[in-house]
Length: 88
Image (cartoon, rainbow, N blue to C red):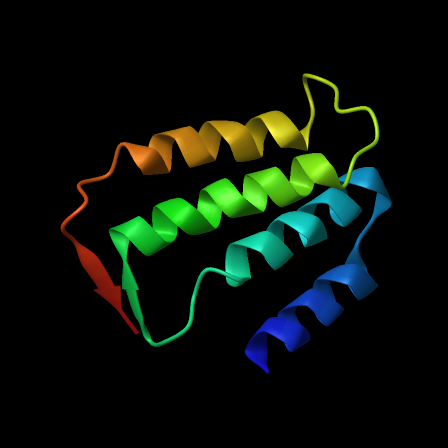
């Protein structure tokens, strides 16, 4: 599946902690999509779930890391209008 290929590539190319954390984020992010139409609520869920997965992958999360970027992005995505969709 595309999800598997993306995660395998991300893990293979992961460099350091940020790479592993980003791979965890992608795993949670990609779990939120099931078809070729992406709605805003799905995107919000994807970023939230990805951020949660990333935090869960770290034993002692610290501020000033890629985790903050993921969390900040998830917060900004939550502010999007809920009635839009993105088509591939």
